[in-house]
Image (cartoon, rainbow, N blue to C red; front, side, top):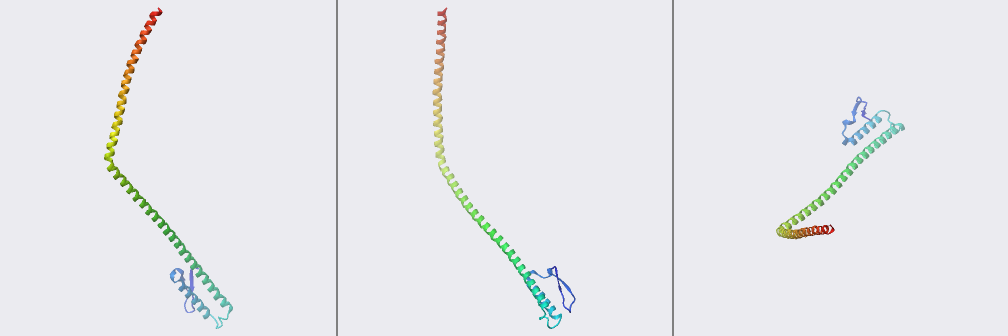
Length: 182
């Protein structure tokens, strides 16, 4: 119902909007409306109104209707509150879970940074001696390669000389064979 009619015999009909009453005072409004209805019923007729079965039926109908409406409103409010409560609890649980994950990630990061700093400090101290050792090893390996290459050059030069000597002998033999065959 979008509006309610309040009616007394002494007063003209006045339309009251439901939006005029505040939602917090809905029980007070409901009680005042019930009181107005009862007063209308009791003032509208004879003295045996309470004994009239149609009046009792109308009164019980209005009371049942009001009870149903108020129960429905309470159920809606409770479900809305429960929904908000569930949403709040879910968000709270999610926040707690994310906070714990963030905390563990921060701890892991701090541990890894500490390990990195220790490793860098260790290298800085060993760096001077390690550099000298690696440089010495590199120079030894280079000297060894140089000496091997010098040996290979000597062998190559000897082989060239040997090859030349063999070519000369081969040419001499070919000449001898050609003279003999003539």
